[in-house]
Length: 546
Image (tube, rainbow, N blue to C red; front, side, top):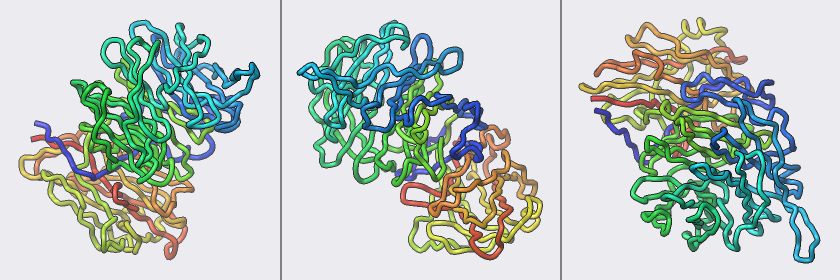
């Protein structure tokens, strides 16, 4: 029997095994990557040659002929030349982007003025219906208005734009959802208050709810999730308190209740979410209070507790924002997002391989922690596991560093030297009697100083002496010495057979070895951390069977 592993307000992170080397300004020439992470099938840039200086606020949809993506692009957000651009996937390749509409507007006196366009949202009417393209036109929010175009050939050509009725803005950033047989429910907002717009005839006519929030906490850009029996949840972007908001409906979106802020950090940046075919909820967002990096994927079963189980982007420069997410009929998840406003990035995930929940984690954002403790007990341990202790090997020197478990490292020329000297961090995972463990991943935040080792590798042992390498050694490139630490490539475990059925009472020992560096005496800290109130610095995910 599977045990549900729930922890309240404990958020732990795992990380995509993306090659650190291409996390910079340059992107590979072919703009497509096959990622060494079982859940990530593909990562690619939609535009081989971006047509405008800036691209932002993308949307993606599945049509009978394949995927379609849209975004706004121009000189810069708010500039009059910003229009709506679109690309279609044909034979596994994205077509050259086409500008399908601008904000050219005829005024009452018959003169014309060009306003910027904003936030396109695609929605495919089921059962052979048209593809809808919602967007906004106007000098800024809230002075903009909603527009709608239709395509009957899967996005190749489009109808004449029509202005939505007064007070109807369309889906403000995130996709509409189908309600019942012929109804669309659009998540929307204006002047930092939420409302929902409904059409019972596939977008021909519209009604809307009153504002369902009072404006005391500014909130915008909701996404809608399903829980069965007309129960819905909307999650989205809050303007203060640096959290994702939540609100619930029990009647299919007619009325809404229980507005609150979740214990999910967000730097007032756009996010999106989708209900998966297996009933879980998936959200894409920036798991931070300060910047549009990292870009994360989190999973929830109840909409209240969210587990960040994947990081798509994680470097210090940032600019990974405004994701849109769908699940296609084949069960795969497609995500598009702004990549530094220079391109639109597309990621394909297999959600069945995003599994596990936190079993053990360390959070060093605790009173009295100074970083040079000899050992550190895990701050969260699942009830079916023995307590886990984090320690250093003899080749590392304890070092003070806030919200971290820290060491300075002498110079070790290579892995063999680091192994001989004992330059490692170590912890173990062990099930209590009768509890069998299956491990899925390990995630770590590293805070590496400029002259510290820039190479590391993970190993594990089932007997405490024979250590086996997990994956490839990681070379940490420049920019990874951020004082707050940066989330590192994911350590994927569910492909390792002997870690999928760990017998009760059998300890698995993990070691993180490091080597290299340019100084053995100064500025050479290699630290696990930082932690903060909502983010642990080290986490082991998995499941427990009885």
